[in-house]
Amino acid sequence: MMDNKETQQTEPIDENVVNTTDENAAETSPLTEQEQENIKLKAEIEEQKDKYLRLMAEFDNYRRRTSKERLELIQTAGKDVIVSMLEVLDDIDRAEKQMVNSNDFEIQKEGIQLVFNKVRSTMQGKGVKPLESINTDFDVEKHEAITEIPAPNNSLKGKVLDEVQKGYFLNDKLIRFAKVVVGN
Image (cartoon, rainbow, N blue to C red; front, side):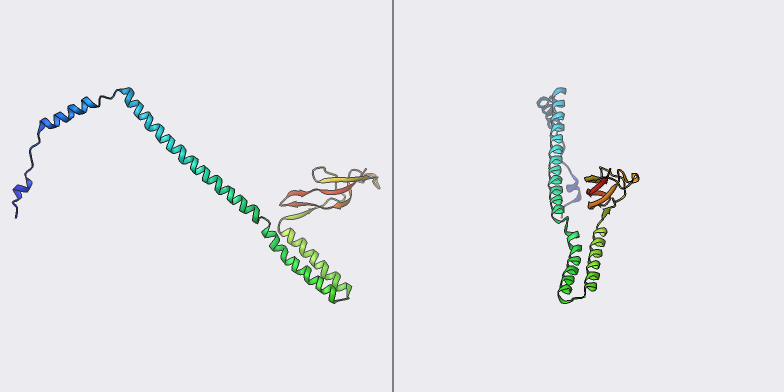
């Protein structure tokens, strides 16, 4: 077993060695203020380059990700509407089968009317609404005039008298102009 006194003894420090290294450090690294400033500036430039490269990489990843998301959105944009219209298509198929098997025109008429109503309600559920045009003032923002005819009375001048093709809104944005006949 070792004596505790032996383990606690330390070697004496040679002050000449310490002083020599301090003098050598002073002799080998006399950096001027200009050199110190250059070193700081180079470090800042490297830091800014790193930040710039990281930012550019992050932006490039963002651009790729949003481009991919937009492409996926475009490819599946109509899926929701098509899936909802498949039910209507099933009803149309059933109505067609009924027309072949039945000679009762009143029942066929009633079935077809139900299909028409289902198409309208499905489209309205997706945000599609018809533009009401007849007997309203002609508006170039909503209507496309096909022709003008003499108005039956003065109160109908400049108003829509007939609608050749309906106009439609999708979520309150006009997606198709109404083709109309205007009174003059």
